[in-house]
Length: 275
Length: 275
Image 1 (tube, one colour):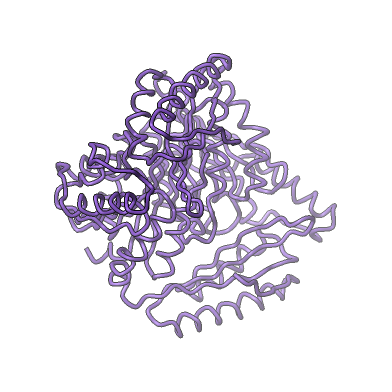
Image 2 (spheres, chains in turn yellow, orange):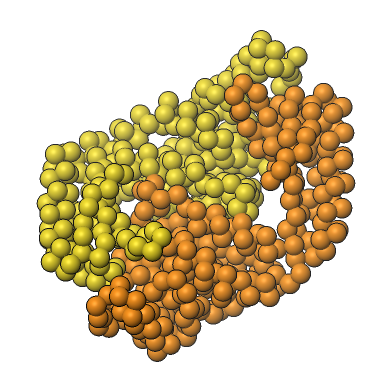
């Protein structure tokens, strides 16, 4: 159990991602946000609006026992919004009408009518569909759209289903998901910095990185070669996750000093980068 | 076998994607390019620079029997470039030094020396590493960088490993991968268009989409709600994959006419969108 604390998986659902119509900015935003909280995203899976695909992706993720699985997309009223059905299938639960969710949806349409966006509304099957949650799940209020987010605890894994519209996804995340993740993360912080390296090729940098990482086991160093015009540069990214921000900073600073002198000795140039 | 023809999986490898440092533009570019060729991307999996994670992701993808698996990232000279080792593990093959690959790498460094980018070079273990391929694999020339791409046929699945640097990934794709995909796709074309819908909410659009899709089984219609300033709009995306471009266009046009009149009857407005 304790081994899985802190691990998060993201599942992005939507054909638009698989046909390259839409860039997966949701997964990027979530990954950055979750990492900054001191938790660790271990996998992102993107599948289409297909019940079997969604269900297998969720089932496989559950089997890897992360602390959290966060899905985006597929919560709306159309026939191809299949996330809740997929999660129900993966967790072997029935879908059932959730009163609290239905109330949230009803209130939203009442607002639309009050604002003159609609003349009147009925609770059609398409609207009720958004309130049919896997048994045991709870709705998370959507402050900017219609479909509520959904929270489900299943076999020690917390599943969180968010809409695919970025503004709705972010709003539900900040209001309802953030407190849960903070609690799971404890005091962990993620600390990172980048260096700009020129005058040395990546294959000559490789042994230096290895040496410095051996001596600084808590710091992760990754080289990102960049080709800017005719100048070859390498961005060297250093990061650590730690329960004390001062310790984190000290670790990174010590590593910067060591790698910088090794690179300088080989004729390379090191400069800080604003990230 | 024939059932899997045309299916493609993408596996993106790199911690930078899981910490939200880098947006996964590689998967987006590949998905768009592959879809436009008439093939179908079924899943994108993102994992970190971890041998077990890479190996399981590749193994799981192979078990789903797509025609192609395309990986990006993890082919370089540093310790955390582990893609080839992961593929070797997943396919139960040894890594062995590939003469052709080593020759490509050597030529590249000779060019660097000739261009004055390096004074001299040795074939260190870090450089030779990029030529250690899973047994039976072939290198694909990298016209803009050092690490070759890699092609491996395994149990009826074609695995293609590309670098993570976008310029290198795209160059190898266009030169060496495109002909293989075109051949697998036959004459298929992907045809798409988008409509801009206002004056109707998504839950009222849902039954209209269902009705029109029932009558146009080859056309896929997906609604994408957008919130632009105070105006709610929905982008309606229509697409089809077909072996005859004229037939594809006719299918889409017929669908446009049907959905447009249904939306107009309900008081909504439809306009074309340039995509």
